[in-house]
Length: 137
Image (tube, rainbow, N blue to C red; front, side, top):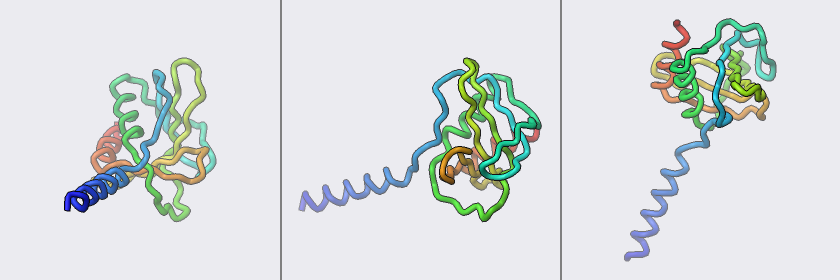
């Protein structure tokens, strides 16, 4: 009986662990700025910057949005990303290029590394709300 109970508990723990997808990552280095440009499409990066975030508090907020997004297959149906996001590091390291589809209020947003094979990452609805507020500024 104890082994059945133990098997059930272990199964639940495995399922709970599997629910959380792999998070997005950035370099563990100081960020100089986060640039946003209107996207030209998946696989391309528009280097014409629309606006940049350079204040430390704002950088930390956007960084949190990115780092809390988790890998989850998502159908984007050939929809163009809303923005290309370029994370520029202080030490001149290579820039992270990310495509961003901004979700509606309380809905997930979609992020995708420009150089990956179409793997998508979803934010929470709360993180989308934070992001939407940042984009209004």
